[in-house]
Length: 389
Ligand code: FDA
Image (cartoon, rainbow, N blue to C red; front, side, top):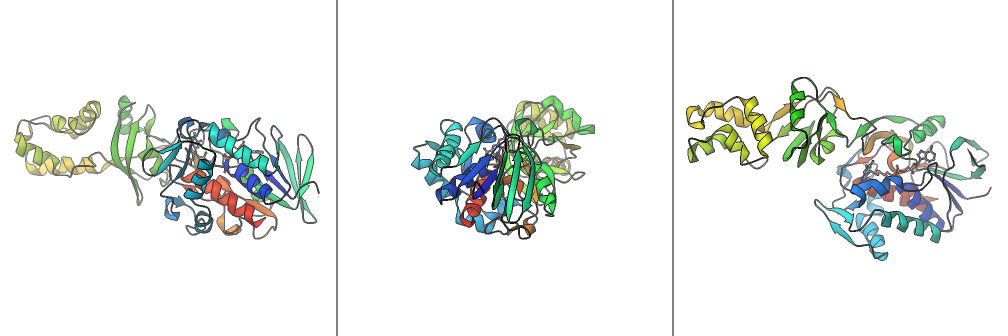
């Protein structure tokens, strides 16, 4: 056998795992089908890579088994990755909500990972497409467009199918199924929602952004929402999209800093105020106009009964949209679902039924919130895996 470990996929998790395993003395080959490693890292965080989050906690991850991620996340923390970043002199800042970004470029994170791989003597092969993977006599054999390699350990770090035009594939799921492992139905997450019917009229607000509390199921997020020409986006909507089930409503509180009495209070202060003028003091003018029109109280507040004003306030506190879908994997930052956690050891990410076979990163049914949580899972699951190899 030519190597101790073959890692498939040179993205966030694969690079980290290969580097760690190499530095622990393993002979590692890392195979990537794209022409260069870490392409998603390069475009992440608007080119500055939101590489971790200081508020990482297991309840900020979606998974069929909410306990699965605990062990890996506890053993390799946001502070650990931050220490690595600082050891390379990479300047960083906290943007908001514990989200840490490079001051410079995401390229610095890719370079850091490549340097870590070099320190572990990792053999990186890019531009090789994988044909088949076999398993005989305790060895995994990987046939690629350039040759045949074998090792007793195989780590699958090929991510999920979000953004296929960047080389993303469902390869990990096919391989899991080939080895008899279950896959939790993958669906796009951290993805814009599309609107139809009555809601379509909101398309006229394309480009308008406002702070809201968006909700889907039991999940609620206070951040910006953005109207787009196809529906709704912005961090608050991306967050709830991961929890949204097709057919379910999404609620939006357009008055996160006011209560349902907002118009009654405004009337007391200024009887000539209108719904529109009151809203214009709380949100962008165009949105205030659109919402006021839908509420349909064109007269001064002094002409309205408190009951009607309270009802208007309540409607704005719980505006209900009925998305007709999402923008799909083409626009999704991540994938919910993936290789079932019940098939893997939470300590080492090794398949319980297939010794030597491991799945890490986005390929696994663990999906983080927006804001650096997904990279932290990639780092943590990679380190957990590498330490068990
Ligand atoms: P990743 O996708 O990084 O790597 C998989 C690798 O495997 C890729 O290099 C791919 O080419 C390769 N591959 C796929 N199929 C293969 C095959 N058949 N053979 C060989 N190689 C194959 N997260 C975060 O925490 N902070 C952020 O700022 C962002 N920003 C962001 C922006 C955008 C636009 C997107 C799309 C996503 C993000 N994310 C993010 C999410 C983050 O990028 C994602 O969670 C991680 O990259 C997942 O790491 P993995 O290593 O698991 O997969």
